[in-house]
Image 1 (cartoon, rainbow, N blue to C red):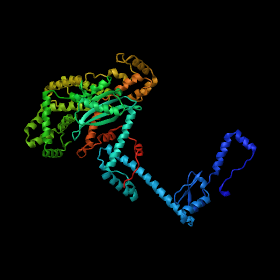
Image 2 (cartoon, rainbow, N blue to C red; image 1 turned 135 degrees about the vertical axis):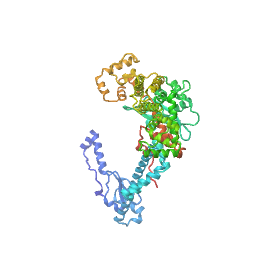
Image 3 (tube, rainbow, N blue to C red; image 1 turned 90 degrees about the horizontal axis):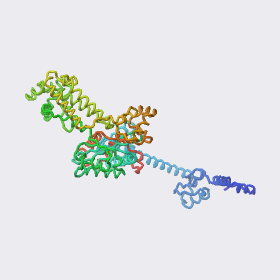
Image 4 (cartoon, rainbow, N blue to C red; image 1 turned 30 degrees about the vertical axis):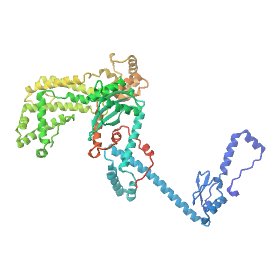
Length: 619
């Protein structure tokens, strides 16, 4: 037994005892070292008794390779190991070392296979979640994963890496229900992230309501808030409204969701909506009800909607030309045979386009695009209607005055469409949108002055044969546009907010700032380091960076920069809703979750989602 134990050296000295009593730390260290040396170590010869080791290498425990019993370190002696073999496995006491070595190798292989399977299942779960995110981003049906993506991946992997890799790909769970659950988990992860970020930030809302293909009303809301050193736009919610869509109903839905997110109206700095009575009604409108909760709210009527209202034609002569133009287009577009014949005619004449565009009143850019397309296919239309013997339409298209009016409408609506398109962006705010409308107003005044003197250089496609007849028509329409801008945008000037864009310029005293705000502005304008920083970073990042040092002024600046100027994001969201809820998916119940994964600026943490569930491979 002496060769299996390291015995403690006997000191027996009174001097050493006294040293240990005087220095207890050294005594404890020596005892720990002794205990370490007394730990029994595994010897390869123990395998003939059917024992291997497990646990810590410094203090191993004997492990029976037959029954899996684990014994204490004190049992790591041949006599105790042999007693276990003879008492519990008497039928194996005559087996040699090779037999137990074979048992140990089999257990090692089984352990490796199990660990490999667990690792593969975790990878398969991660791949399943990533595929679910792709499907949600593309607004596709859940069955696409199992019916298209998985077979395609198997074909590709088999061709590139062989059948073994194909079997691994088959383990990824991609069924319809699995993808549905994955999207719900991704949506929940995003929602928790948004909730956490909104707790310590003010925010602005843009809200709109529309119906889907199944006539279900949906209330869509986006939020804009400060995230780190930037201002971001984020999908907030999409709630179905089963009955009425009054202002009180909209207010209740948004309030309930804010309460679920542990938010209040006090943190909201502004709301942007369209001009519907349920949104902007002075008594029972949604915004009016929200203002009762927070009187400091900034309300904004969508700039895009107002720009479309500005472009409404009030002059009877121009309105008649537009009506006749729609008749011409509808004669061809509403008849499939006429559309095919016109297409063949355009191909034979090597035309730039082969189809006309349909005018739709609810599509804001439709009017200008239809006018432009008809003007470009003017000659082709004359030839086509001559063949069709439609003298009324040919008479319009050959009339110089009628064509001059059409060309003017084409030019002016192209300008209006350009302005509308320039305001359709994710990062638009009140300052940038106002600048574009101010520029349009100035252009209209310039065009009106030049048109009054018979100069139509600003409209290059207009004919010069009917200038005298067109002068009063053009001037009258431009005057109406100018008046409409003043009507729908009564306060178009943003000069009093120039300090937000550049706090280092000479600011007039009558800009509506309080004393503490003016003092902070004076301090900022005198800081040369901030002036250099202002020239290198965006406006929103600059004001976010000085929040702690100048809280009052930065809060006022950011409340304006946060405010939405258009409902562009809501319109974009409704387009996504139409892609998600098609005729074949009109009974989809997870609409909000699908849209959150598709439209969110904040992306989910896929590894965090994967850890919440036990990994399972597909059978």
